[in-house]
Length: 432
Image 1 (spheres, one colour):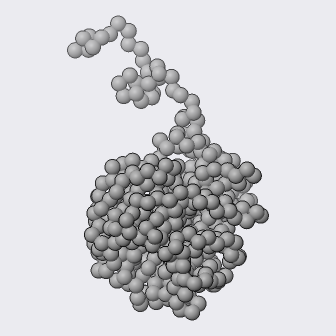
Image 2 (cartoon, rainbow, N blue to C red):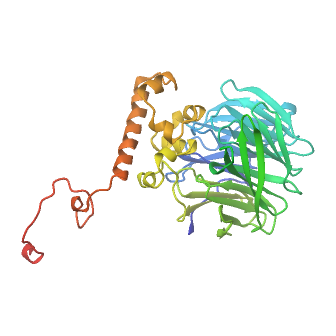
Image 3 (cartoon, rainbow, N blue to C red):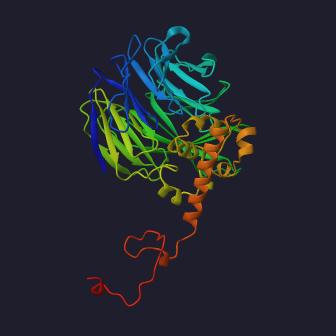
């Protein structure tokens, strides 16, 4: 079931994009504003709306830690905001001042990518707020982008219909004519789905376009061998151009929004339609899954954002203790570790852990020495907090892996008894 739990109607014009962090939802609009809501009750934060763009805001996105928010606009700029208090930290001018259509942080928050209507694509160094590299796609506006999970590669999509794969040195590695009438959006799942013969990981990528289609691809990112892109299948559920697509955090579902006013949720592995949502009254322009909760946001040219509760969505690794028993910690991906860090109020370390490729196995092997010497966490208090959470995780693994004998459980509540006693010769009648 997908249940509509809230409708946000604060924008005065078309909603162009929405994005989640672990605690907030950001939306942007043709009305030149970005609005930020708390996920606890969907009320606007005190500093919202954010104003500063001179024209329509086309895209917004949070940094991996959720502390920074980027937005881009027809005014030819990408703005960087502090998501904690709404301060504008920087305004980055696109070369040529062309309208900026899309922006995205790299997984380690090293770079911020901006793509524009003139086909220019820029990597900004987030730390220095300076232009790092720039390039161009041919014959169209750049309207879509997605980073590889390790942040060393990224994919762009253009109105010419091309998907282009780049490395972080802005070298064009591969180009594919994907949608004849133009690409509108693309996304890459952070969960590997298969291994190549050489042991490298494939990831799923989705692209959608003006041809009414969503295409699923398998993509291989290898630093020394380059990249490989394989067509997997086409999802044909929409009857009009598809404007947005996004994977769930576990990669098991993909959602899309269309000019046909519908939102469709698919099962990624089979391509089966799980749900069709038709509550919007105009084109659906954006859709996004929350990273650590079963929520979906959809935005539309009807000026609203719908928030949906998904009963069939499983939480991602690190969200709950129950889930830790289902997914072995040593099998966690780097994104699973990031989710766990955020859930443990350690979101400040997400970028650092990703930069050092800390997956589940590496997480369990961390020591006070490796935190200090390899990850360069200087504060003793911070190291102690991280180690405490890791030790709690190890204890959870032990409690999950070692079954409790039935005689140690209360026969009524099924909870572990602290001081069990044996009652002999007593019946329910004797207790009256």
